[in-house]
Length: 67
Image (cartoon, rainbow, N blue to C red; front, side, top):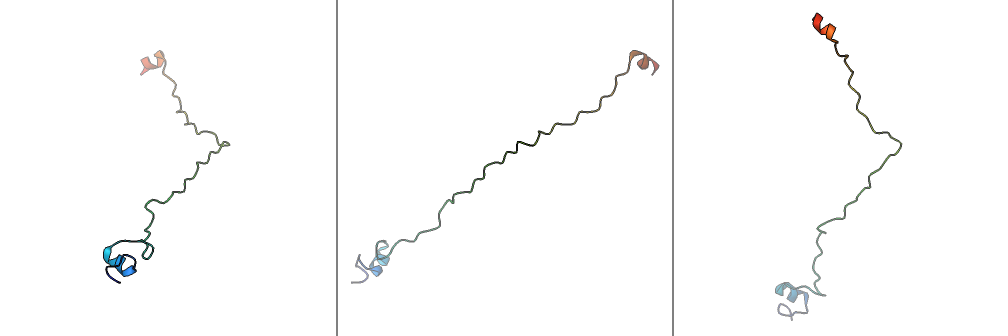
């Protein structure tokens, strides 16, 4: 018994196998489930509209001639 025995812990260590006597280590999970938050939709808010540019009145033909 011992190093060559497949049923003992020491034998499994030497042979490099796992089983009931020497269970394999459970490592860290490779991918954790991510917490996904649903987007919050606020219906009370109005969409933001861009401010209109101030209109500059066009010069008439008479005003253009004066310049």
